[in-house]
Length: 123
Image 1: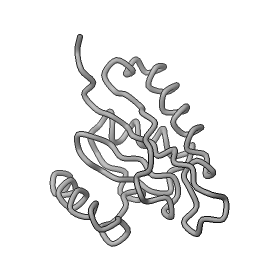
Image 2: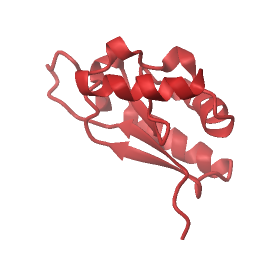
Image 3: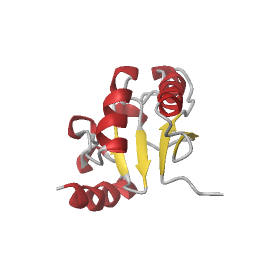
Image 4: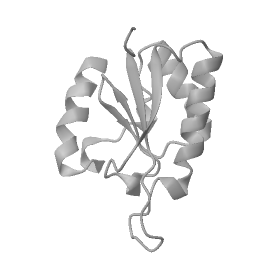
């Protein structure tokens, strides 16, 4: 069995309603993951690329958070309307969607180095 070439992790964390940072689940992350899965299947990419539900990625204050591996690129404020662009640019053509990348200053302390290193490959 072949392993997946890339993983798209979509945060589906659930927090209390009154949490100041909110949570990705209440911002529509499950629906976003479903759109990723549907489009990957339609494009015949679902055996190479996997859209996974993720627990807390500790970035809910930045809207729905999506992380793509192995590149370790973190996207924030992702909506259903962004899915096609992420698939076409990042997944198919290996180009990041720069307007959605969480900049280092937006990432929690332990995550900053990941995007810094990932972005070197893209520039």
